[in-house]
Length: 448
Image 1 (tube, helix red, strand yellow):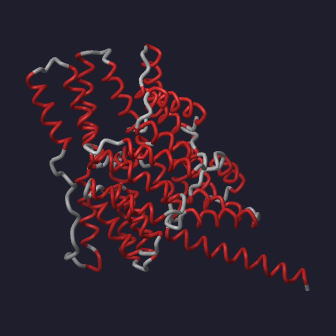
Image 2 (cartoon, helix red, strand yellow; image 1 turned 90 degrees about the vertical axis):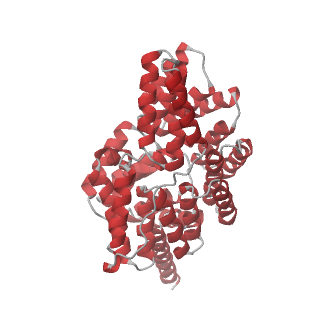
């Protein structure tokens, strides 16, 4: 789902400059050397979003009382934010929308853009309520149903999300609608259906908007990866990079694909390129795990410090990345109380399957196995084929003594995507081998 995925990619409350400075500082410490290549600035080349920003600013200067100019400016800022991952553009979009609402309080286009922006800020309930108010006042639009679909998915109300997505499809079966159908199918374990819908979305995209077209290619590749079709997925990532060179989402996806192929050095290179353009915590976490897998502990520690820097330096970034931070701490057996507290707060606000999964993992790490089992049951209620979720389930069932089910879950995790976490995947294989060896030994004793 577009808004849902771009929340990860674009919800950067910590200023980009600050994180880039941290990357440069941490990189300069590697092996005590200051000669390591420093992080490059964000990709700021002129494109359609830049042109639209300039045109709308000129229009506003000429017609300062026209709310449509501010709406167009807000839309251009939001597009630029997606392209660069710079959260500052969303703040500028919000300021433009505030001005538009002052000029025309009931402007529906302004309200629709504002509801979309609320999704970016993770204010899902507010976005849903705003969309519903607009819908009740009429007329309903595909954009409103899209906002409602995204918010309902994030809140865990999947039956209502499906209804909203169907209404969107009925009104206008475009790329945005098919992308939402794809994600809903993936959540329900229908990987082939997800791929089919995303292929339609790719065909329906406008090639004159390269970032948008590349986004759909990347997420077709993601669904192909989830279905174990790595080579096909990687071709989609390559196409995305040709369409929109330097696109951080495509670079990170290539890193994931290279890791799945066992090319860890190649994976590091792609993740580093993605991080240099948009320094998201997801990229630092992935790099840290890759460096650990490659036996480069100093570099792994630097990436882990970067994740902690994001959390420590800006409270609002920690709020946006709460789930990632909780999982990061749980994975590294650090700050387990804080991780569990974060996920309890998340669970109080939303009951989607990914929140339940992260909650289950934090409960497991604290030794609360009964609660972890209940949470992972809720996480798996849709049949989602998510490798990390399956790994968590396997480890929880193993701790509970259900070795047969643990083996099933661990094997399914490895079959789904060995790049979900290169360190944990290696551990999952070892644990799976131990379970099977123990089962064979017991079987031999019974025969004797």
